Each structure stands twice: as structure tokens, then as C-alpha cells.
Length: 356
Ligand SMILES: Cc1cc2nc3c(=O)[nH]c(=O)nc-3n(C[C@H](O)[C@H](O)[C@H](O)COP(=O)(O)OP(=O)(O)OC[C@H]3O[C@@H](n4cnc5c(N)ncnc54)[C@H](O)[C@@H]3O)c2cc1C
Image (cartoon, rainbow, N blue to C red; front, side, top):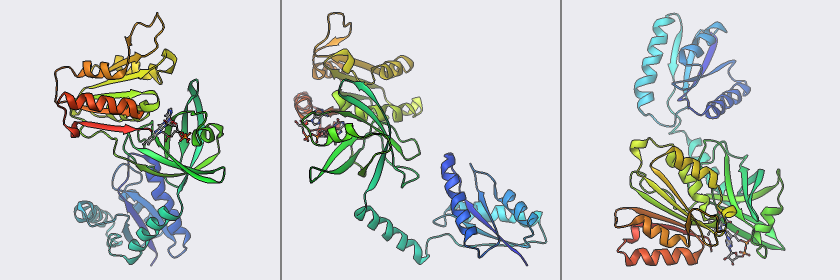
């Protein structure tokens, strides 16, 4: 009797995840041990189990082994899969059906985890530069991909740690991710060229296709509770994590998020990075307020003037129930934290990231 194998996965709204399952199924088929192998999905992917079984029978299977591509015996394997297989038994009375256990409990699983942990320590990932664009004089937006992973898991606001040998020294620097997770292996950075610096000139000399060693994502500069009202305060490239956080926050349902006020300080209008994006978001979403402020404004500047600290304090007003997030160079971050402390803010209400 010919045996057909239906690999049964959950399925994902991210089609590349479903494609990854199909890739595993192809590898399974390439092993040559079983002639008939088909992928199937519980939901969000095609075909479903019925489709895979029909195809196996069409190809001559008289026996179907359903192999769950699931780690543990959760509700989908306890409840959904037996029901689906019973439906197939009723539809195909002449066919024998078997279901195998989930993957955990198999000794190879622990070995895979050990392997993964070792790999993380011995060989950092490579981030490959895909493209870049100038945001302002000496400031660039970089788009990277990490080809060794299908999906880069991170929370908006986290940073990556990049390293490279420069002038015979191994140099490592942190950079906040300026994009929100997109379910793929891509991320963006927003970088200032420090002309006498070591690492930023190396990144600015990089061309698309170039690679740099990367670790992470790391850090805890992430939205603690999106339901709370938040004041976000940034200067210069300190805006980077907020760009990703804004996209992640906008993706939440309106009822599940507290209002956000972004106070962003720069010297000149042209160094208000991503200004048009923030202004457009503020125009489209009444619960997002954008306060750009310039320390060296031209006469024609119609907006706020002066340092971010005073505008942040003004935006907070009498309220003491807001969560304040601050990102930028040490002098600004320390000064604002001291002012908030003097106003009675608890340490846990102030989340910050210092770049130097
Ligand atoms: C968690 C974290 C996240 C960071 N995220 C970013 C980011 O998203 N974008 C970014 O441009 N930098 C970021 N930095 C700063 C970055 O790690 C480097 O310090 C910066 O690129 C300078 O490195 P360098 O080797 O070129 O200069 P170095 O040789 O290290 O020279 C250091 C000098 O650069 C100054 N400096 C550091 N960062 C900046 C900056 N952003 N703008 C102007 N002067 C600076 C320091 O005050 C110091 O005077 C981050 C730092 C940390 C700790």
C-alpha cells in the first residue's frame, strides 16, 4: 500500500512563514524515504488538510500519515486535528489514517536548541545593507536585511549592536532600530555621521550589498503599556526608536492605545528628521500630537522654539499619570530626568535611552 504524508502546520498571515513550511516539506520529500508528501495548514495557509489528503489519494495513497509540524500538544492537536482527521475518515472510508505526536519529546529538538545557542555565540549574524537615503546633511536612513533569518524578532524601540574591525581594532556600536517589526528580516537605522568617530564613518562608506556583523536585537527602550498616555521626547538621531514605536503604536486598535505626544528637537528645520512623516501621522490621527521645536530657528519658523525639555514639561502640564520616554544625547536626557524627578515623577514613569 502506498503511504502519503501530510505535514500539518498551523499557517500564518505572513505568507513567507507558510512558504518556510513548504520549504521544510520539500526537504522532507527530498530525503526520498516517502514518495508522496504534501503540506497542509490548519488556517491562514493553503491547502488545508482536506486539500492535501485529496491530493495524496489522487496520487495513489491508500494510507495517510498526518505529521503535525507543531511543537507541543496544545489545543490544535488535542482538539482540532483529531476532528479534521475524523472528517477525512468519513469522506474516504477506504483510506487508513494515522496521526504522529508533536515534535517535543524528540531528542533532536533539544540538540537543535543547543545548536542555535552555540551559533548565536560563535557567529554573529550579518546585516546586509540594501539601500540608504540622505535625511539631512550628515544624517542617513539605512535599510538592512539579515539573510540568515526568515524573520528578525524585535520590539519597536530596541537596538542592534554592530561590530567591525577598524584600523586593527574590533569596534562595536549600538544603533536604535528606526522601523517597526514587519514580519520579515528587514530593519532600518537612522545615523549621524560623527566625522572624527570610528564606526559611523565606516557605516557611511558602506555601499548596498556590504555586510556588517550584528548582534541583537537588544534593549528595553520599548513601549511599556500602550494603553497609558505617553510623552515621547527626542533630539537629533534620538528620534530613531520613536519612528519604529510610532508605526507599532499606530498598528494598535484606537481603543487599545493611550494618546501620544512627540516632542522633537533639532537645530534647523532641515534637521527635523522624518518631519513630514510625523506631521502626516499627526494630521491623520487625533490621538497623536507632534511638537517639533528648533533651537536655532529661522525667522520664518512658525513652530515651537527652544529646547525640547521646556516643551516636554509644558506638554505634561499638571498631569502626573503619563509615561515619559526620552532618547538622545546624555546632556538632554539627564537634564529632563532631573526636571521630572523634581516634579515628583517616579523613576518607573520615565524610560530613557542615552546615545553617549
Ligand atoms: C543604545 C544606543 C543606541 C544608539 N542609537 C543610535 C542611533 O540610532 N543613531 C546614531 O546615530 N547613534 C546611535 N547611538 C550612538 C552610536 O552607538 C555611536 O556612539 C555613534 O555612531 C558614534 O560612534 P563613532 O564610533 O562614529 O564615534 P566615536 O569614536 O565613538 O565618538 C564618540 C563621539 O560621538 C558622539 N556621539 C555619539 N552618538 C552620537 C550621535 N547620534 N550624534 C552625534 N554625536 C554622537 C559622542 O558624544 C562622542 O563625542 C546609539 C548609542 C546607544 C548606546
